[in-house]
Image: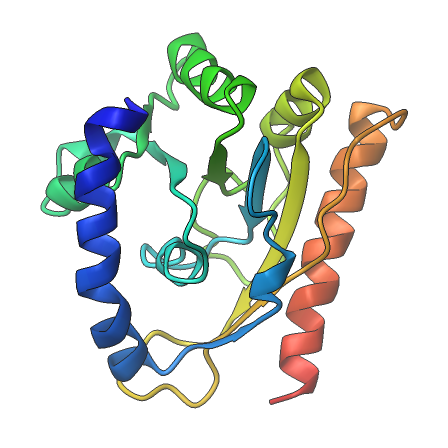
Length: 197
C-alpha cells in the first residue's frame, strides 16, 4: 500500500501545504520531535475532520492514518484514499486494519491515529483512550509521538495550535500505564496551547 499511494500522497501534501497554511494559519510547535525514520505512531486528540492535515504538512515522512470506514464512502473519500489512509471498520474488531498498520510499522514506516477513536463532540476535555496505539507500539517497539491540537479551523484562525511532544516508547510499562501516560502527555500539550493563547 505504501508504494501505491506514495506519489499521490506526496503530490497531495505539496499541493495542499501552502493553501492550508495560508487559509487556516496553524501554529505548529515541535515538528522536529517527529522521528525522521523508524517505526513511529503519531497520536493526537480529535475534534475535527481536518486534524490529520497539520501533521501531514509538518513532516516529510509519509504518515498512514487509520480512518473510519465511513470516510471512504463519503465526499472526502478521494482524500483519504490518495493520502494512503487505512480503512477501519469500527463496528468489529478490525484485525485486517491492525495487521496493515503493524506491517507498515515493522518496515519502519509511520502511522497516525486518534486514540479517542472518534471525534470528541462532547464537553469533555478528552474522551477515554483506546489501547490500539500503545498495544502496537509495544509489539513493534515503536516510538509514540503525542500531539495536542486546540483551536478552530477557520479562515486565518487566531488560535489553531498543534503542539508535537517528545517521542517515547512503551518499554516496560504495562498497556494501562502507557495509555495513561499517552493521555496525560496529549492533555498537557493541549493545556500548553491554551495557556499561550
